[in-house]
Length: 211
Image (cartoon, rainbow, N blue to C red; front, side, top):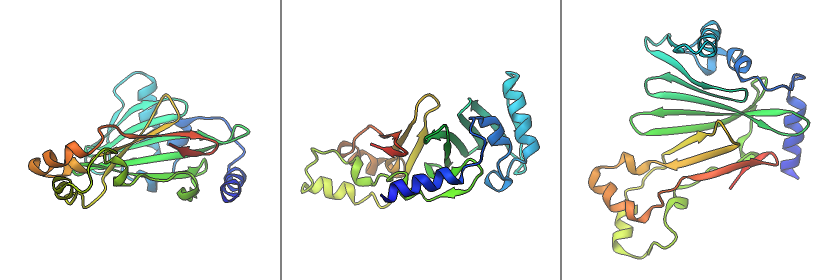
C-alpha cells in the first residue's frame, strides 16, 4: 500500500509533458547537479554529439567533459577525469516517467550514488523504488563462514564500495562490488575466493528496481 501511494505521488508530481527526450532533459537540468557545465555548454555538447563530432568541452574546473552516449531515454557523461553521470528515464504508467541518476567518482576506486527525480527535477524518496545491496550479498553461498581463512579475509571488508551502472538498452541497473579493488594486493588475494564475481542486477518493473 505504501508503495502504491508513492507511485500515485510520483505521477501527480510529473509535468504535463510525457514524451521522453533525454537531450532536452539534460540541457534543462539545474546547474547545481552538474556545476562543471552550464546549460549553454550542455547544449553545445548535445549539438556536437548529434553532429557525430567529438562531444568534448573544457569545463569550469579546468578539466574536460565528454558526452559519451545519448539516446532518447539514456545519457552517459564523463563530467571530469574521475567522475561520470548516467541518467535513464524509467516508465511508470500512462506514458509517465521518473529519472534515475547514477553519479560515480573514482578516487581511485569507483563508488557510486543512485538518486531518483521527477522529470522536473523534484527529488524522490529512494526507499520505495529499490533496496541497495549490502556487502553480504557478494559473499559466495558455499563459503565456509567458520573457516579461519574466511574470517580473516572478510575482516578486511570494512566498507562497501559499489559501482552502479545503468543500461542504455534495457531497464536494468547493475551493482558491482568493488571494495576488493581498494585493498592491498595480498588482502585482495585472500578475499577473492570467497566472493562472487558477478554483479547484482536489478530490473525495473511495476515502478521499482527488483532483483
